[in-house]
Image (cartoon, rainbow, N blue to C red; front, side, top):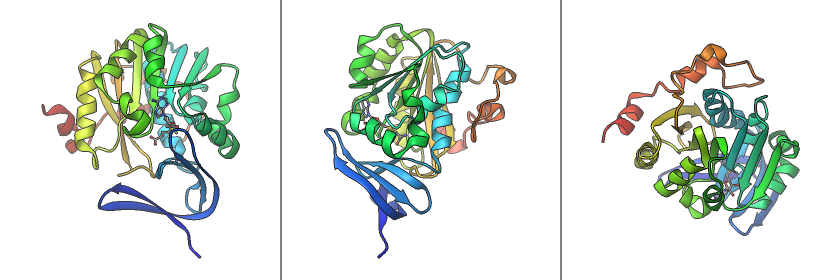
Length: 277
Ligand code: SAM
């Protein structure tokens, strides 16, 4: 018998993957969690029926959400990740020698525990001595930490349920306060093809708080529309004005210095979307 997982992209379109084995399912305090082994993408973490990460394509997402802000900052020492319980963003942050401490604030401890068990390639950095794993709500965490981080990365689920409050002006204001004077934050900000109004609103909200706001794109094969947006809010540094020759070579598969420049060159429909008021 063939077993397939179907993820709706909207009410009219879906992505499907053939499942080799269901490794784990449970209802956590916050969401339905499944770890599946699939033929095309290998092991995958699925929350509330939405694919979060897969062994085969995770590198593009985790590298782009991490290295673009970390190489934009001149000397990132203390980094915060909100969400990101699979550990992929932490693994990438640890590739930066300047980083002395990385805090992961994930609301659902089961995501962390099961990622450690079933996705060791992704979660491997979570036990590093530079990493502190804090289980709690990212909204409260940023409100309680002021002027503390050089870079913050919002690696969250879509803006529903526990993650809803991670996508509004009040949260962006708290994030601004949580960052040091030259701090930067980056968030995953959904698909401009399937959710154009959401992308536009998020960009406008971040722009109302941060002096430098830039949207950039990455290719994530298992996310709706594949062409995925990230938005950066920065207090000082402009990611397009940095000298890319200072970007050192890391062990990456997607990000490298030329791509740092190229990812800000947007297809016209996306540029129009965020520029037109
Ligand atoms: N890369 C993924 C994506 O875009 O699909 C996100 C991966 S990561 C697994 C997302 C995490 O955000 C989930 O584990 C979820 O529990 C966590 N999360 C959601 N709301 C949160 C909140 N308010 N505070 C902290 N973590 C939160």
